[in-house]
Image (cartoon, rainbow, N blue to C red; front, side, top):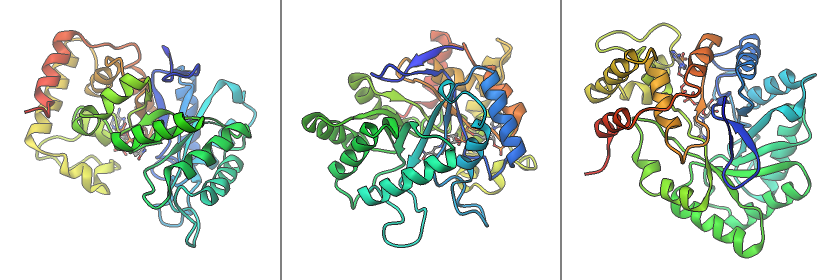
Length: 322
Ligand SMILES: NC(=O)c1ccc[n+]([C@@H]2O[C@H](COP(=O)([O-])OP(=O)(O)OC[C@H]3O[C@@H](n4cnc5c(N)ncnc54)[C@H](OP(=O)(O)O)[C@@H]3O)[C@@H](O)[C@H]2O)c1
Protein backbone atom coordinates (compact mmCIF):
# COMPACT_ATOMS: atom_id res chain seq x y z
CA UNK A 1 0.00 0.00 0.00
CA UNK A 2 1.31 3.40 -0.95
CA UNK A 3 0.63 6.25 1.48
CA UNK A 4 0.23 9.54 -0.34
CA UNK A 5 0.42 13.08 0.91
CA UNK A 6 -3.00 14.73 0.88
CA UNK A 7 -2.55 17.83 -1.27
CA UNK A 8 -0.32 20.46 0.31
CA UNK A 9 -0.72 19.08 3.85
CA UNK A 10 1.63 16.71 5.66
CA UNK A 11 -1.10 14.09 6.12
CA UNK A 12 -0.42 10.61 4.71
CA UNK A 13 -3.38 8.63 3.45
CA UNK A 14 -3.59 5.22 1.80
CA UNK A 15 -3.94 5.14 -2.00
CA UNK A 16 -7.47 3.75 -1.50
CA UNK A 17 -10.00 5.31 0.86
CA UNK A 18 -12.94 3.24 2.13
CA UNK A 19 -16.32 4.93 1.75
CA UNK A 20 -18.91 3.97 4.35
CA UNK A 21 -22.15 5.08 2.71
CA UNK A 22 -23.35 1.45 2.71
CA UNK A 23 -23.09 1.22 6.52
CA UNK A 24 -26.56 1.10 8.06
CA UNK A 25 -27.99 0.81 4.52
CA UNK A 26 -27.00 -2.17 2.38
CA UNK A 27 -24.47 -3.39 4.98
CA UNK A 28 -25.70 -4.17 8.50
CA UNK A 29 -23.59 -3.37 11.57
CA UNK A 30 -21.76 -6.71 11.73
CA UNK A 31 -20.94 -6.65 8.00
CA UNK A 32 -19.83 -3.00 8.29
CA UNK A 33 -17.38 -3.91 11.09
CA UNK A 34 -16.01 -6.74 8.94
CA UNK A 35 -15.69 -4.41 5.93
CA UNK A 36 -13.76 -1.85 8.01
CA UNK A 37 -11.49 -4.50 9.50
CA UNK A 38 -10.80 -6.03 6.07
CA UNK A 39 -9.89 -2.59 4.71
CA UNK A 40 -7.71 -1.72 7.72
CA UNK A 41 -5.96 -5.10 7.67
CA UNK A 42 -5.33 -4.55 3.95
CA UNK A 43 -3.48 -1.30 4.71
CA UNK A 44 -6.29 1.25 4.25
CA UNK A 45 -5.97 3.99 6.89
CA UNK A 46 -8.44 6.42 5.30
CA UNK A 47 -12.24 6.23 5.86
CA UNK A 48 -14.90 8.53 4.44
CA UNK A 49 -18.34 9.08 5.93
CA UNK A 50 -20.95 11.87 6.26
CA UNK A 51 -23.42 12.84 8.93
CA UNK A 52 -26.36 12.14 6.59
CA UNK A 53 -25.36 8.50 5.89
CA UNK A 54 -27.81 6.74 5.77
CA UNK A 55 -30.72 9.06 6.44
CA UNK A 56 -32.49 8.06 3.20
CA UNK A 57 -33.23 4.59 4.58
CA UNK A 58 -36.70 4.29 6.06
CA UNK A 59 -36.51 4.34 9.85
CA UNK A 60 -33.05 5.98 9.91
CA UNK A 61 -32.46 9.49 11.23
CA UNK A 62 -28.95 9.93 9.80
CA UNK A 63 -25.64 9.36 11.55
CA UNK A 64 -25.87 5.55 11.32
CA UNK A 65 -22.59 5.27 9.40
CA UNK A 66 -20.72 7.53 11.85
CA UNK A 67 -22.12 5.57 14.80
CA UNK A 68 -20.90 2.27 13.33
CA UNK A 69 -17.44 3.75 12.72
CA UNK A 70 -17.40 5.06 16.31
CA UNK A 71 -18.16 1.59 17.66
CA UNK A 72 -15.50 0.03 15.43
CA UNK A 73 -12.95 2.61 16.64
CA UNK A 74 -13.52 1.82 20.31
CA UNK A 75 -10.41 0.15 21.66
CA UNK A 76 -8.44 0.74 18.47
CA UNK A 77 -5.60 3.26 18.15
CA UNK A 78 -7.38 6.40 16.96
CA UNK A 79 -4.17 7.95 15.61
CA UNK A 80 -3.70 5.09 13.13
CA UNK A 81 -6.80 6.02 11.14
CA UNK A 82 -7.77 9.11 9.18
CA UNK A 83 -11.48 9.85 9.46
CA UNK A 84 -13.18 12.10 6.94
CA UNK A 85 -16.76 13.24 7.50
CA UNK A 86 -19.11 15.78 5.95
CA UNK A 87 -21.61 18.46 6.88
CA UNK A 88 -24.37 20.20 4.89
CA UNK A 89 -27.35 17.85 4.60
CA UNK A 90 -30.50 18.04 6.72
CA UNK A 91 -29.92 16.46 10.15
CA UNK A 92 -32.70 17.91 12.25
CA UNK A 93 -36.01 19.71 11.75
CA UNK A 94 -36.28 23.46 11.47
CA UNK A 95 -34.74 26.20 9.34
CA UNK A 96 -31.20 25.59 10.64
CA UNK A 97 -31.34 21.83 10.39
CA UNK A 98 -29.24 21.90 7.21
CA UNK A 99 -26.74 24.12 5.41
CA UNK A 100 -23.32 25.62 5.98
CA UNK A 101 -24.16 28.45 8.38
CA UNK A 102 -22.03 28.86 11.50
CA UNK A 103 -25.04 27.79 13.56
CA UNK A 104 -25.58 24.54 11.63
CA UNK A 105 -21.88 23.63 11.45
CA UNK A 106 -21.22 24.18 15.17
CA UNK A 107 -23.99 21.78 16.26
CA UNK A 108 -23.41 19.29 13.44
CA UNK A 109 -19.74 18.85 14.29
CA UNK A 110 -20.49 18.16 17.97
CA UNK A 111 -23.06 15.54 16.96
CA UNK A 112 -20.61 13.90 14.54
CA UNK A 113 -17.85 13.81 17.17
CA UNK A 114 -20.19 12.08 19.63
CA UNK A 115 -21.30 9.48 17.10
CA UNK A 116 -17.74 8.89 15.91
CA UNK A 117 -16.62 8.41 19.50
CA UNK A 118 -13.65 10.72 19.04
CA UNK A 119 -12.57 14.24 19.93
CA UNK A 120 -11.34 15.19 16.46
CA UNK A 121 -12.19 14.64 12.80
CA UNK A 122 -9.16 14.48 10.49
CA UNK A 123 -10.86 15.86 7.38
CA UNK A 124 -14.14 17.77 7.69
CA UNK A 125 -15.78 18.37 4.32
CA UNK A 126 -18.62 20.54 3.11
CA UNK A 127 -20.83 18.00 1.33
CA UNK A 128 -22.18 20.29 -1.39
CA UNK A 129 -22.59 24.08 -1.76
CA UNK A 130 -25.02 26.10 0.34
CA UNK A 131 -26.03 28.97 -1.94
CA UNK A 132 -27.75 30.84 0.93
CA UNK A 133 -24.75 31.17 3.26
CA UNK A 134 -21.83 33.49 2.47
CA UNK A 135 -18.64 31.52 1.85
CA UNK A 136 -16.70 33.55 4.35
CA UNK A 137 -19.15 32.65 7.15
CA UNK A 138 -18.62 28.95 6.39
CA UNK A 139 -14.84 29.30 6.13
CA UNK A 140 -14.60 31.28 9.38
CA UNK A 141 -16.63 28.63 11.22
CA UNK A 142 -14.40 25.87 9.80
CA UNK A 143 -11.28 27.85 10.69
CA UNK A 144 -12.52 28.07 14.29
CA UNK A 145 -13.01 24.30 14.40
CA UNK A 146 -9.40 23.74 13.30
CA UNK A 147 -8.14 26.21 15.91
CA UNK A 148 -10.28 24.49 18.58
CA UNK A 149 -8.67 21.15 17.65
CA UNK A 150 -11.98 19.54 16.70
CA UNK A 151 -10.99 19.27 13.05
CA UNK A 152 -7.53 18.80 11.51
CA UNK A 153 -8.10 19.74 7.84
CA UNK A 154 -11.03 20.90 5.75
CA UNK A 155 -12.23 19.84 2.32
CA UNK A 156 -15.03 20.43 -0.19
CA UNK A 157 -17.21 18.05 -2.14
CA UNK A 158 -19.33 18.66 -5.24
CA UNK A 159 -17.99 22.21 -5.64
CA UNK A 160 -17.70 23.70 -9.14
CA UNK A 161 -14.26 25.08 -10.00
CA UNK A 162 -15.21 28.75 -9.73
CA UNK A 163 -16.61 28.27 -6.22
CA UNK A 164 -13.59 26.28 -5.05
CA UNK A 165 -11.31 28.96 -6.50
CA UNK A 166 -13.31 31.72 -4.76
CA UNK A 167 -13.11 29.78 -1.47
CA UNK A 168 -9.33 29.49 -1.79
CA UNK A 169 -9.11 33.22 -2.42
CA UNK A 170 -11.27 34.06 0.64
CA UNK A 171 -9.11 31.82 2.83
CA UNK A 172 -5.95 33.36 1.44
CA UNK A 173 -6.84 37.01 1.87
CA UNK A 174 -8.30 36.45 5.36
CA UNK A 175 -5.60 34.14 6.72
CA UNK A 176 -8.10 31.30 7.21
CA UNK A 177 -7.51 27.56 6.74
CA UNK A 178 -8.23 26.55 3.14
CA UNK A 179 -9.91 23.56 1.51
CA UNK A 180 -7.00 21.14 1.19
CA UNK A 181 -9.00 18.44 -0.53
CA UNK A 182 -11.74 18.03 -3.13
CA UNK A 183 -14.16 15.10 -3.26
CA UNK A 184 -15.59 15.06 -6.80
CA UNK A 185 -17.77 12.58 -8.67
CA UNK A 186 -15.20 11.06 -11.04
CA UNK A 187 -14.80 7.76 -12.84
CA UNK A 188 -14.20 6.42 -16.36
CA UNK A 189 -17.84 7.05 -17.32
CA UNK A 190 -18.15 10.47 -15.67
CA UNK A 191 -15.15 12.54 -16.66
CA UNK A 192 -16.04 16.00 -17.94
CA UNK A 193 -17.31 17.45 -14.63
CA UNK A 194 -13.89 16.95 -13.02
CA UNK A 195 -11.51 17.12 -15.96
CA UNK A 196 -12.75 20.31 -17.61
CA UNK A 197 -11.81 22.82 -14.89
CA UNK A 198 -11.43 21.15 -11.51
CA UNK A 199 -8.49 18.95 -12.48
CA UNK A 200 -6.25 21.81 -13.66
CA UNK A 201 -7.28 23.86 -10.61
CA UNK A 202 -6.39 21.05 -8.19
CA UNK A 203 -3.08 20.42 -9.95
CA UNK A 204 -2.16 24.10 -9.87
CA UNK A 205 -3.26 24.70 -6.25
CA UNK A 206 -1.94 21.32 -4.96
CA UNK A 207 -5.32 20.21 -3.67
CA UNK A 208 -5.78 16.55 -2.75
CA UNK A 209 -8.40 14.74 -4.85
CA UNK A 210 -10.48 11.86 -3.50
CA UNK A 211 -13.00 10.86 -6.18
CA UNK A 212 -16.25 9.19 -5.20
CA UNK A 213 -18.08 6.44 -7.10
CA UNK A 214 -14.84 5.22 -8.76
CA UNK A 215 -16.65 2.06 -9.91
CA UNK A 216 -19.63 4.05 -11.24
CA UNK A 217 -21.75 2.63 -8.38
CA UNK A 218 -20.77 -0.91 -9.33
CA UNK A 219 -21.34 -0.67 -13.10
CA UNK A 220 -17.60 -0.88 -13.88
CA UNK A 221 -17.25 -4.16 -11.98
CA UNK A 222 -18.82 -5.91 -14.99
CA UNK A 223 -21.65 -7.42 -12.95
CA UNK A 224 -24.33 -5.77 -15.09
CA UNK A 225 -24.58 -7.36 -18.54
CA UNK A 226 -26.53 -6.47 -21.67
CA UNK A 227 -30.08 -7.87 -21.58
CA UNK A 228 -29.61 -9.52 -18.16
CA UNK A 229 -31.60 -8.63 -15.07
CA UNK A 230 -29.33 -7.07 -12.40
CA UNK A 231 -27.98 -9.57 -9.85
CA UNK A 232 -30.06 -9.88 -6.67
CA UNK A 233 -29.04 -7.47 -3.86
CA UNK A 234 -27.22 -5.20 -6.33
CA UNK A 235 -27.72 -1.46 -6.09
CA UNK A 236 -29.31 -1.21 -9.55
CA UNK A 237 -32.72 -2.16 -8.12
CA UNK A 238 -33.03 1.11 -6.16
CA UNK A 239 -30.69 3.36 -8.13
CA UNK A 240 -32.17 5.11 -11.17
CA UNK A 241 -28.88 6.77 -12.14
CA UNK A 242 -27.20 3.38 -12.22
CA UNK A 243 -29.87 1.99 -14.52
CA UNK A 244 -29.40 5.00 -16.80
CA UNK A 245 -25.76 3.99 -17.23
CA UNK A 246 -26.79 0.83 -19.02
CA UNK A 247 -26.09 2.07 -22.54
CA UNK A 248 -24.28 0.36 -25.39
CA UNK A 249 -21.36 2.80 -25.13
CA UNK A 250 -20.89 2.05 -21.42
CA UNK A 251 -21.17 -1.72 -21.90
CA UNK A 252 -18.43 -1.40 -24.54
CA UNK A 253 -16.18 0.29 -21.93
CA UNK A 254 -16.77 -2.63 -19.55
CA UNK A 255 -15.95 -5.07 -22.37
CA UNK A 256 -12.65 -3.25 -22.88
CA UNK A 257 -11.85 -3.32 -19.14
CA UNK A 258 -12.48 -7.07 -19.15
CA UNK A 259 -10.23 -7.56 -22.19
CA UNK A 260 -7.37 -5.41 -20.85
CA UNK A 261 -7.77 -6.94 -17.38
CA UNK A 262 -7.63 -10.51 -18.70
CA UNK A 263 -4.23 -9.78 -20.20
CA UNK A 264 -2.93 -8.79 -16.73
CA UNK A 265 -4.92 -11.10 -14.46
CA UNK A 266 -7.00 -8.18 -13.14
CA UNK A 267 -10.77 -7.77 -12.87
CA UNK A 268 -12.64 -4.89 -14.56
CA UNK A 269 -13.17 -3.24 -11.15
CA UNK A 270 -9.43 -3.33 -10.49
CA UNK A 271 -8.70 -1.90 -13.96
CA UNK A 272 -11.21 0.93 -13.39
CA UNK A 273 -9.48 1.77 -10.09
CA UNK A 274 -6.09 1.42 -11.81
CA UNK A 275 -7.16 4.03 -14.35
CA UNK A 276 -7.70 6.51 -11.48
CA UNK A 277 -4.61 5.44 -9.53
CA UNK A 278 -2.42 6.14 -12.57
CA UNK A 279 -3.48 9.80 -12.72
CA UNK A 280 -0.99 11.79 -10.59
CA UNK A 281 -3.64 14.38 -9.63
CA UNK A 282 -5.65 11.72 -7.79
CA UNK A 283 -4.79 11.07 -4.14
CA UNK A 284 -7.16 8.22 -3.18
CA UNK A 285 -10.30 6.94 -4.92
CA UNK A 286 -13.08 6.30 -2.37
CA UNK A 287 -14.25 2.73 -2.87
CA UNK A 288 -17.68 1.58 -1.75
CA UNK A 289 -18.46 -1.94 -0.60
CA UNK A 290 -21.48 -3.93 0.55
CA UNK A 291 -19.48 -7.08 1.37
CA UNK A 292 -16.00 -8.06 2.56
CA UNK A 293 -15.38 -9.83 -0.77
CA UNK A 294 -15.89 -6.53 -2.59
CA UNK A 295 -13.26 -4.85 -0.37
CA UNK A 296 -10.83 -7.65 -1.11
CA UNK A 297 -11.40 -7.26 -4.84
CA UNK A 298 -10.77 -3.51 -4.66
CA UNK A 299 -7.64 -4.09 -2.57
CA UNK A 300 -6.37 -6.09 -5.55
CA UNK A 301 -5.98 -2.75 -7.35
CA UNK A 302 -3.41 -1.49 -4.86
CA UNK A 303 -0.17 -0.75 -6.70
CA UNK A 304 -1.80 -1.11 -10.12
CA UNK A 305 -0.60 1.50 -12.61
CA UNK A 306 -1.77 1.24 -16.21
CA UNK A 307 0.59 1.51 -19.18
CA UNK A 308 0.49 4.51 -21.51
CA UNK A 309 -1.11 2.29 -24.12
CA UNK A 310 -3.87 1.07 -21.76
CA UNK A 311 -4.55 4.63 -20.63
CA UNK A 312 -4.75 5.84 -24.23
CA UNK A 313 -7.24 3.10 -25.20
CA UNK A 314 -9.52 3.86 -22.24
CA UNK A 315 -9.15 7.61 -22.60
CA UNK A 316 -10.12 7.51 -26.24
CA UNK A 317 -13.23 5.38 -25.58
CA UNK A 318 -14.49 7.65 -22.81
CA UNK A 319 -13.24 11.09 -23.87
CA UNK A 320 -15.67 14.01 -23.58
CA UNK A 321 -13.55 16.35 -25.69
CA UNK A 322 -14.85 17.17 -29.19
N1 LIG B 1 -19.56 13.39 -1.72
C1 LIG B 1 -20.62 12.82 -2.25
O1 LIG B 1 -21.58 13.50 -2.64
C2 LIG B 1 -20.63 11.32 -2.39
C3 LIG B 1 -21.59 10.69 -3.19
C4 LIG B 1 -21.54 9.29 -3.30
C5 LIG B 1 -20.55 8.58 -2.62
N2 LIG B 1 -19.64 9.22 -1.81
C6 LIG B 1 -18.58 8.49 -1.06
O2 LIG B 1 -17.92 7.60 -1.96
C7 LIG B 1 -18.04 6.27 -1.48
C8 LIG B 1 -18.12 5.33 -2.63
O3 LIG B 1 -19.24 5.66 -3.46
P1 LIG B 1 -19.97 4.53 -4.28
O4 LIG B 1 -20.52 3.52 -3.33
O5 LIG B 1 -20.87 5.17 -5.25
O6 LIG B 1 -18.66 3.89 -5.01
P2 LIG B 1 -18.41 2.76 -6.07
O7 LIG B 1 -17.12 2.14 -5.62
O8 LIG B 1 -18.47 3.35 -7.44
O9 LIG B 1 -19.62 1.71 -5.94
C9 LIG B 1 -19.66 0.85 -4.85
C10 LIG B 1 -20.74 -0.19 -5.05
O10 LIG B 1 -20.43 -1.03 -6.16
C11 LIG B 1 -20.72 -2.38 -5.84
N3 LIG B 1 -19.43 -3.09 -5.81
C12 LIG B 1 -18.27 -2.70 -5.24
N4 LIG B 1 -17.28 -3.62 -5.43
C13 LIG B 1 -17.84 -4.61 -6.14
C14 LIG B 1 -17.36 -5.83 -6.65
N5 LIG B 1 -16.08 -6.19 -6.48
N6 LIG B 1 -18.20 -6.63 -7.34
C15 LIG B 1 -19.49 -6.28 -7.55
N7 LIG B 1 -20.03 -5.13 -7.07
C16 LIG B 1 -19.21 -4.29 -6.38
C17 LIG B 1 -21.40 -2.38 -4.49
O11 LIG B 1 -22.81 -2.18 -4.69
P3 LIG B 1 -23.88 -3.39 -4.68
O12 LIG B 1 -23.14 -4.67 -4.42
O13 LIG B 1 -24.87 -3.04 -3.65
O14 LIG B 1 -24.47 -3.37 -6.07
C18 LIG B 1 -20.83 -1.12 -3.85
O15 LIG B 1 -21.63 -0.59 -2.84
C19 LIG B 1 -19.27 6.29 -0.55
O16 LIG B 1 -19.24 5.25 0.41
C20 LIG B 1 -19.12 7.64 0.07
O17 LIG B 1 -18.16 7.59 1.12
C21 LIG B 1 -19.68 10.58 -1.71
